[in-house]
Amino acid sequence: MGILRNVFKRGPKKEIAAAAGAQPADEEWEDLPLYIEADAEEVGLVSVIASCLAAEHYPQSRFAVKQIRQFNPEAREIAVIAAGLAAEYADDCQLTVTKIAKNKTSKEKEHVTQV
Image (cartoon, rainbow, N blue to C red; front, side, top):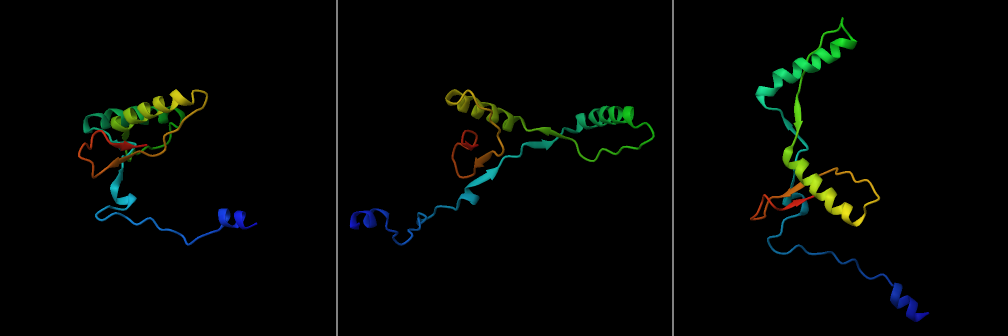
């Protein structure tokens, strides 16, 4: 009985002390947006095409395009690489990238990303 008590006894909770100068996790990483604002050149063309497609089904309605966003190419590249690496180990499952974060404090900012 004493052996089990020693194995399963609960001691005081140990808090992991942050090292001197270490930042909390929220301040270390910044979210990489999945969508970014579209280029000014593309906004006109995309809004005309979207309005024409919508007007085909609702000809008496008026349409106002408020925002046009495009998928972030950097986020797409990182998501494809991460999904490919994960699929190597679990090829029979589907993967969804829900959040991509970038390390602010890294010297190689372009190469350090958390998925």
